Length: 275
Picture (cartoon, one colour):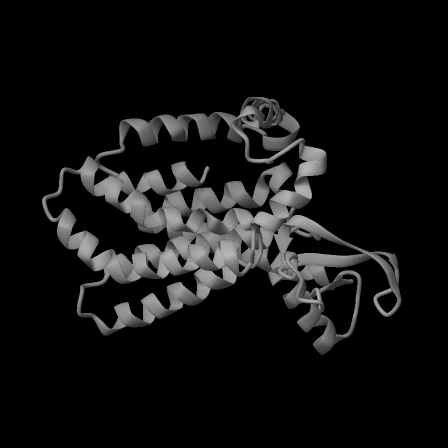
């Protein structure tokens, strides 16, 4: 199935599998540039405990989908302080056809999204606590563990480093005078993020995944020239009724509300940036 690159080469953190041959006698192996070893490691553990089954990874993704629906509810409640908003958001996630197609697949997106949401929730909870609260220390340690763990699923999960900067922007938006105090409070986490970025580029060696993509992406896949055609593909897909039902309209209304209500509910900027 998916295996860790035992040679500890430059692609050792990428999800690697045998494309020709068996795991015991592999003639040609292949690595996916964007997917890392986090999900394969969980799958390996499940295979070791319950025995190998083709459906194991689908079961894992189904569990991650259930966790995600709960996290959506909690995060929405934290942001809007209204349980009905969290309930509706979770219901949208559960019943949207295109999202349903991910719930029992063997793709990495489900687990990746779940861990990003978990990182956001712990981050919000961490900065809700008073400065000398002992629970704050535990949340900080948990935040570190979850951030490091999530970074080993998909390279796009580096988006988690944006959370404190969104917090700074929110404080500027609210014209709060204690911004320097908030920066001082954030300092330990910012130091950790510097180390996390270093780990991302020099230990996980994410640049190697970009090199692997150059052959079929015609250069660096994160070039701005790819943005417009990919964005138009997203728009065309988003407007398909069979994929999103009437939630297309709800999403547009939600974005308008975020823009209008950005000062009274500034935490709404978090889902906007993640979108």
